[in-house]
Image (tube, rainbow, N blue to C red):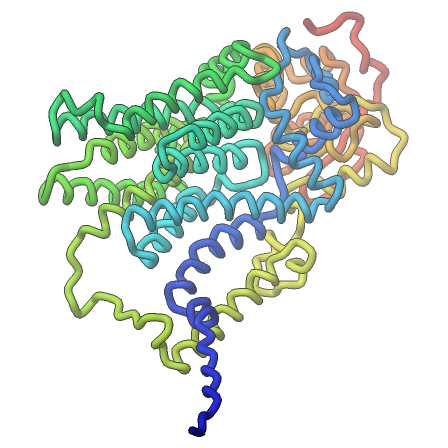
Length: 524
């Protein structure tokens, strides 16, 4: 009997087919959008004092009890609940430069929306729908994704959301939530949103259980017991910080501070801004409202979804900086509701299984993936300056509105050290110039008494007492913004007590021409 050896099977390369399937392309789009948005943004605003604060903490090996970066009088208690975020971003800058800060922040943003995508996919059971909702959430949160402590808070919030919804009830999930909350309480003042989210899920879930199965079912619902245990664990974990209960005083002070509400635009009610971010938020609000309305009309409305959307919509309307929290919650809920909307058969996407996709389709997907990879590579901080498709304002690593040339001038001159600058430049000048120069104040509104901000406002707007108030703080140099302080620049230019030392398209620097830069007593 003659036998023949079996013919080796032709490799199917199933993994390649899956990697190049249209569903995989949608997944890639869902995470590429947040990455592209975050990595292409130049560094600005808060990141500068975050980096300098992280540098001081790393050098001292302990948390500071006073602020040494600015010379305005400070509030009696100095609390830095963001110290872990400061060390994170400073570590990126120390090891990888500012490029590492931009790229690391983009990775954080991508991880955040990757979790949002997975939550949306779990709810809607559609990769395309999850990708669309994730990209919508990215667009809504776009103005809040710069590198700063709050961005790390977004990741910790979404991770908590994911564990609460997707995690299996048990010790491991509770431990994950506790660890996340501890990290959050040492990273950003939004830490209370972790237990807040759990409380909303518990309340909405309880209503759903009572409506569906009656009151007696409350004690037999394992997910509700898990939420109750998670709420207790997260509440205790919030206290695992160097400040203990003092952290709550800090948050209460921030939220109720009238100076913050008056001076900082991101703390204004969202409706007051009426900008592109407001338009995107309203669009997502209307779409979510329509989805909830359709659910209420066609079937029993899910109380958990309604509670989540209403609570975070109210939070977003209260302040523009809160819109991102709404976006993170909205996307999964919206995906779940849109998945139940009937779609005419002719409009449904026809997707062949990956193993049966034609070579032509796979080739087109490969080209699309390759093009997307090249586009993302062209946005990396090391090469984006040469990207002709980016607007000029986004090509640089540092935002064009920061006074880079003015700071370089000051570093080249042997001038006295005390600077009053436009408030939004204070952080950048501190990062560039400290300790050789000291700025009066920066964007950390909460660390200065209200009287300091009233003095600054009077100077900024060129009120009659501007010179007296400048003298009160023993200011040596003025670094003024042509865009935001034209009236003050005109007054200083006309004064015989000041002389112009420098000017460019952004800034004008004045130095004293008299000897009255040092008052006899401290202003407070």
